[in-house]
Image (cartoon, rainbow, N blue to C red; front, top):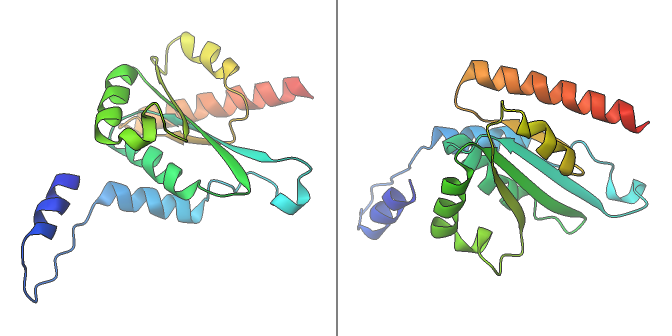
Length: 168
């Protein structure tokens, strides 16, 4: 993690080059390279109003939190607003940890629109919460288990197909 990078950077290594590999971070950035946050939006010149990138992250483990940080980094575009919602059953603990580790992201004076919600993503409150979130156009399943990721992906697909067809 970040502590290892600090420790390694503080040591004189001479001609030795040290590279830390973080498979989760690399996978997240590879995904964002292939499917950028703005991929579901119109090009700015084709839109009549300012658009919002609305990111929904289901799961706040290592992958979900890494995606949150990467989305903030990749979503800093002057053409778009960015709003991120992370849902996890340990949302309050995750928020406290992130506020402690990255106060610039979630602190009182943070310029970012980030909300972390404590909810069981498979519980009945999830749909109520999703109904309150406006403008979600990028979803991430990061629950730590392939089967759970597939279940939540199917649920989100059905939810947004229903919601979008009801809007028409």
